[in-house]
Image (cartoon, rainbow, N blue to C red):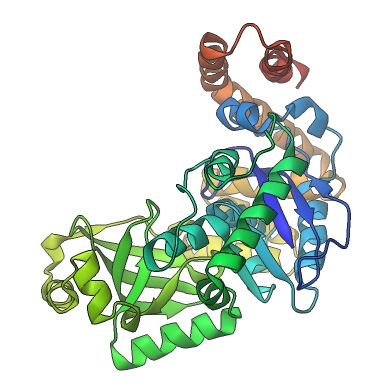
Length: 402
């Protein structure tokens, strides 16, 4: 399953998608369906970022009547739960939006655990360039990377069918030119889980790939619910950082054996020295990265709020009413908004009025930033491109329609 999420803002607890484009194939890459879009409604209180809308060619007005987020989530869950499904995507960090969605829907954030594996093709190309052969330069943009690797057709803004074809082209290139590396990254998720557990039990280091494509030497500290907490040493910069990440989202992990003596010599890497630095590091030497956003959210809740959230996960929306005076105003507002997004019919009249009030407050809070981002785009848009000008005007007019 080749898929491209349509992010509406930065990844994190409030990350949202405008939909998901996907293309189904069999295990020999024979196409078995037309490219399909599963759209997702933009919630009435959440202003998307014009900086995401415009590059992806998304007119937010077209998503006003799309299926609600809970329906969208259920459809994706059904698709990913099909036996032996392998998900191939680009910049898989945007798949983390499903975890944020799960938090809003009072579900366990385990969407990425359902397929056999998730493969980030951008990560795959980086690994190929380091340990195998490179056919071009890996860039942040999927179309730009496709061109670098020899894809000839141009992808116009918003042409997600073409972006899917580029994704398939790049994966085919990797399979043809680096079959062993591609095969390794396509291993089932359970193999990666076993690797991490073994590394923890034997206190062994792992090799990973950092966001900028650099190699990292990783020492696992804790592994729970597919979230790995580790100290990571950037092989290039020697920077140490403590991070937590979801191993289900297509990250690269392997044993240090991949750095053979010959590779260490060719890459000018002293593995033994790096391991010593990793294990001798003091707390002051280690930069503390942010916790994974779901972990940070649960940790921020009071004991009462955690109990209310658990009850909501069980379907008891009355838990919020019963404990409304015992939770923070922020928690109450966020939960009521999430409940209203799922089903306004289950709210009382007073709760519904509060829901609309909170929605208005959130829109007003984000208006200035939305306007500033739109104005910035107007200052750099090609005035001779009528399609881009039309799209940008539609984006600019969106808050007024709300």
